[in-house]
Length: 167
View 1 (cartoon, rainbow, N blue to C red):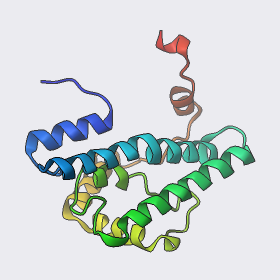
View 2 (view 1 turned 180 degrees about the vertical axis):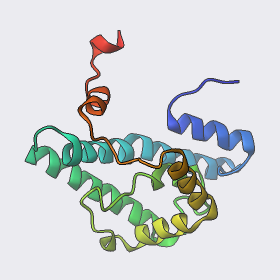
View 3 (view 1 turned 135 degrees about the vertical axis):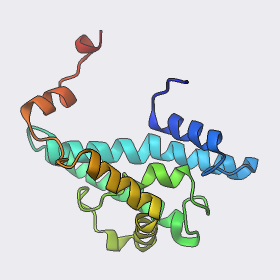
View 4 (view 1 turned 90 degrees about the vertical axis):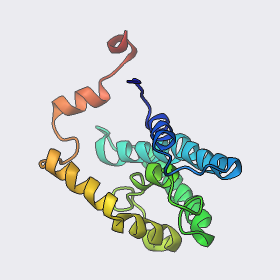
């Protein structure tokens, strides 16, 4: 077995291992990896900050909320533009789509999906995939009471980590 961390590395490893969801052609493969890294370095972190400041921060900081809501909108626009002439991010369904899909949550990110018609179509297409439906059904089965971070203990685990805790 290989122990791994970081979702992008895991997706890349699994795609290579099973020979699916990543192109074999060098140019198309690099395009896929580039968009996977775009999600890892842009959409995920900035949408994550959006979630933090909008939903979890102990105090509402207007500058932070505005910054990350606007950055999320900008990234939605980048993805919407990319999807204007293709069904999926790199043309075919790949790990770039798998990684990005779960971070496009307009109702939680103060975004109007109707402003991004190509992104909306893409989101609906992935949601309709049998494997996506099966994965979300399995998640509900495993954790039927999932409700997001609620308790002080949960917040302490998620937000109380400092360098002293890691040492």
